[in-house]
Amino acid sequence: MTTNALPLLEPGSVAACCPPLSERPLTAEEAERTAVMFKALGDPVRLRLFSLVASHEGGEACVCDISDVGVSQPTVSHHLKKLREAGLLSSERRGTWVYYKVEPSVLAAMGRLLTRAATA
Image (tube, rainbow, N blue to C red; front, side, top):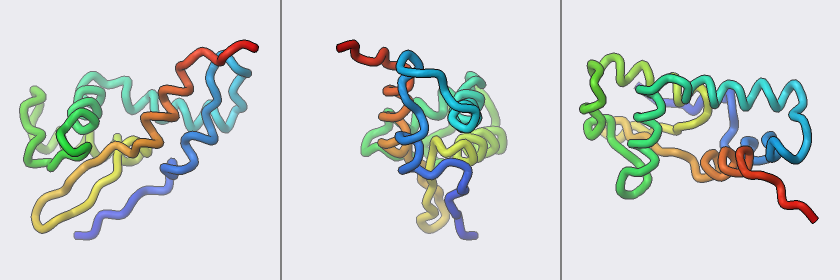
């Protein structure tokens, strides 16, 4: 089975689409793309999985390392898929395991989005 990145959000396009909320109103397109990310993180299990992957040593986590989140393994896989579809995680198959990684540009873009714009 080959794992492909889904084109919903390109890792490099996240930063460009999301100015700080205090800088100017989002366009309809920016709001749509940003809402997909936040909707995916609106589930407590997904938020926990995202945090687990983001904080894992080396910046990536094997699906075999992600088990103790209070839901079954098939449910973990479902939530990881939703995070991937939202452009928040990328994945790579290595042998029998899948490794998940949070793209640094995604974390940076989300941080900028929620940061107050500097005033002159």
